[in-house]
Length: 446
Image (cartoon, rainbow, N blue to C red):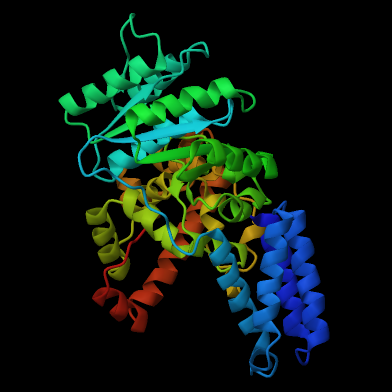
């Protein structure tokens, strides 16, 4: 997400750093480039105008122009303004004093409401809540069955309704009663959508809102539709009163215009983003982290949170010991690759890293996730003795391993060479200053 905008802004800041001195003239030129970059990213033009005016007011002062590193101060100003339009801080879900808390999920047809309901249910269950889902979409064929399948995949309950319950209000009432009776503290209501906003849809949603008194009404929008998503969110808010937005398909939107516009236009926060098709590809939205990504500063906090969610802590501590003592076998190497794979596509992981220093070219690296699969297959084709002691693997063993893993001898040789180099590097670290430091730290080892 934000790749196009990030690249253009970083180029602008690089040009500023190349100036011998920051003047009003080259600052105006930089502001023009920032304006064009934002408009090309499909950011709402009123938002762009306000953003540029705010940056100009703060960046054109004598304090910035005469500073020791003025370009760095300009970057800081742009970051602060991006955070401001994105929402200043994470907007957390609200919950009722008396459960169940009702959350209505609304939006146009095809925006991803049902999938987002399932993803949100998973997120809630991972955050110490007990959600119940219900679909009140009685119009779209198989809509309720689709939510039922998601519930089964997630091992989370979905209220199915009875044959007599054919009206949205009846389904919603019964589902709320079911949630209260079964100790479910959150009820997620997946509502019907239309291809466009009409009075019939809004009347139904208004009736549901009045009946259920939801703590949240979350509008689901497709990020790929850009300003159309922002316009729809604004119309829903004016007619229904939404409390937040879920942007889907953020992983496929290189521009990011909807994310940068939606808070300013609607006045309501972006609360979650969908970043992939899988049910775990769903994140709470953090304005400060998004601003850092846009400016090439990475999103290390999100990376750490993701790692903490999927990495086995006991295994991580044991792996740290093995690294320090240079007791790292091929079996350990395979286990680490499996842990890394749980984090998601490698390309998306690398985009979380700051684009500075030795990592500045990571965004251009094309990663083949199948490489991990091949490597694991090669190690799986070895015997336990071979995994424990790679020195046993002679020519005939390499040919056997290649046949068993469906790879070539050259690929087996390449893996063993990389593994040997890694062990050599770890050995040099473990005996020196870094090894002593590692021994005192509790680090998440992957």
